[in-house]
Length: 99
Image 1 (cartoon, helix red, strand yellow):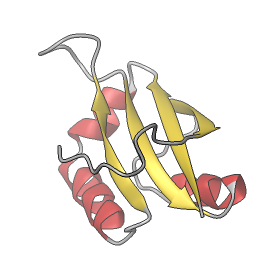
Image 2: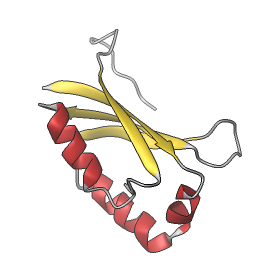
Image 3: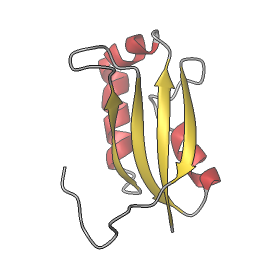
């Protein structure tokens, strides 16, 4: 199993998608249904600023599976959200991190 870091970059119009409560609820339900998405959340350039993207840490066999997970997410709108996927390894594998 591989770990992947996904960095999303949002177009400013993505804020309209984020403001849609039904879509946000669908996104949260989607994330809860996919335990392979180990951690995720929105990114802001500064505290209190608008969201400008997101970060996911995912554990899956292949980059193709990560991209399938992304494309099925209700928050993924290709015209408003781009992403990069990187293989990722935790430096202190023997230690757990609690956020």
